[in-house]
Length: 378
View: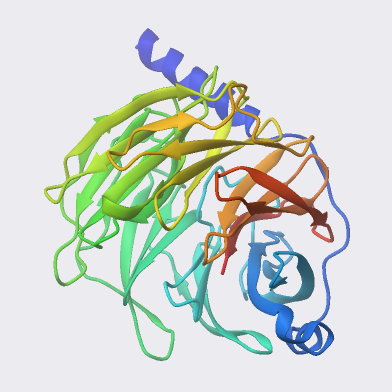
């Protein structure tokens, strides 16, 4: 019992380190059409975050220019509500692989909104109960979506994505987490869609669920995390799983996920030398991984073909923004990295990824209210 309470206390301390003080400013306005007219052919993608407000959740959109810089492109209501505070997760807003659909959790109203991404912005297609309480993360593979519910005992629940954007619950897909103290942070499909992975902050476990041809998740197998308080993670080529670990002193680990669902450590608990690494991404080519650190920095890693990882910079500070961070995301071409800053003024920081993995700052853009969470890019 004492060991369990100590583990919960350690996880709580690590989570708190991922949540710096916040001040909000006004919400962005505009539209994709106006941005396109102003920027011309330079518009080549977008970055999305959810405002997570208790008075009404919305997706704030920023058009991405060909040089990686961002321009406000509107705010689109989800029809649901947020919590106005921390979600303690990664994947609160997620794009389909082709970038045509966007999924956003409404943690305050216990549902998920689906949008169609168009040239003039977002069109709300549906809003569906999440299969639990306080949805905090969503993942998509082809026509199947899974939602991680963090409230109560927590669970994962699966849905088929209908052609009209409606979500239909998959019978028998709801699966429990390891315990009522799991403190989940993220759910994500494996690269081939045959497995689901969930990180548990409270128990320092990584859960793997097999997924059958009908999209039904099977019984969970849990693996001890190589580092304390596994938080966000990313799945890369060849089913590489790159995990950020928020417990002091802060680390990241890499794993290989076998077709049978076995999770094997490759590089365990590589120290970042930066506080509270809580979010993680991997480039499409699998060469680089990055952790977003609650202390206000980004740590870059070189990832080798065997899945092993080492820091790009001895001190772990590949980029520093000051204040604090609360999520990171990569553009669809993996040329740009975006970090959601929540220390003082809430803003999204843009970086260009060089051939050697180093980051070049491109500036920041504000206009986000306090409580904004989640980040996705295309």
